[in-house]
Amino acid sequence: MTRPYSVDLRERAVARAEAGEAIGEVADELGISPSCVSKWTTLKRETGSLAPGKMGGHRKRTLSGEAAEWLDRRLSERAFTLRGLVEELGERGVSTGLRAVWVFVHDQGLSFKKNSAGRRADTPRHRP
Image (cartoon, rainbow, N blue to C red):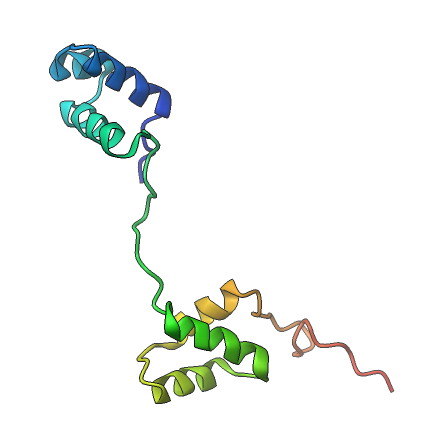
């Protein structure tokens, strides 16, 4: 994936376009497409900023809103399994998958890895 143009280049292009220079001339001299200059001037007019947008999409998390609030409360109440949480959400009318629940739990800092002995890494060892 390509990198967005620098804010410095965007500022120079927009400044020249706002000063009355033709968009085509600005684009030719800076080595960019005319559509970039046009879009950047619109962006500056609408938002006041020339910062590039998020790369990789703006997809909303599957578990958000009321379902996320319920799940957050549920995680603090008692022990859970990911599959169990998927079932509980299904009983509440929320259709979701194991991956979405894992992402939510991981974002809450509650995921774990097993260590080489087969135990959870966050479980203290049993001492006789």
